[in-house]
Length: 101
Image (cartoon, rainbow, N blue to C red):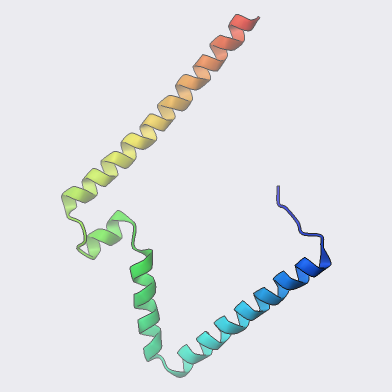
């Protein structure tokens, strides 16, 4: 459940901070529209920050195909282990419930 702030002073401070952020972002957007060369710098900067996915890392030649397949295999094993753990704990809970009766 969401936690709502009911204090008017705190709400007003949060609103003002949000307005300042939006004004700053608006100015940055205007600067990008005025000088499109800054846009490519911004996109390159964002692309470097967001690249954590194996496909992205492979495209940037940070990892090899073998490393990508290992990452996918480990992710699959992790998901499988989690599902098996949930299944086993559910069975354990059912057995404990039957013993209690």
